[in-house]
Image 1 (spheres, helix red, strand yellow):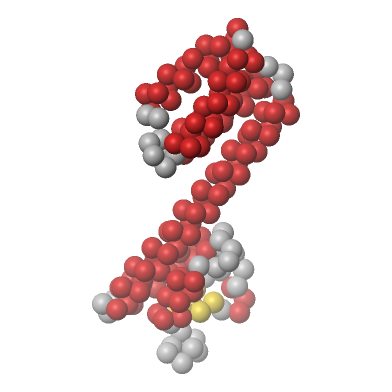
Image 2 (tube, one colour):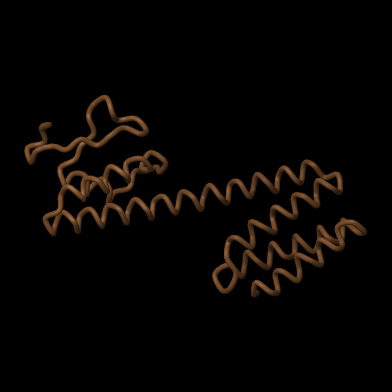
Length: 163
């Protein structure tokens, strides 16, 4: 499915929504199924998110508030899963960059990148192994009172004691 196909089907469903909401809902549900199978081939998650949001609006307009809520909760779950994936990818990229910087002798920049990554690391469970390894390799550890979300990373000496 292309963006043009998606756009055409969305417009048709919206035109049906006022006159025949049940038909619009069938069209939108079918489009959701089509998008789910097409995500890896041609369209992006954005198209699915937009379709789910429109489906929820049409459901609410047709008086199906429970269905509308279920659809929006599904959309929220999808966004949460995507965010978790993107945060983990960001943390791994930061860790890899920090390791490369340290390897090239720029430990200051490596520590700065690790500090930035630390702000996001509390959002993923289990913790990112590459980030953890980079922190140990570059000589960062959490201070005892900074183990919670948003805690700062503190540089350590090679023996693990604070400077």
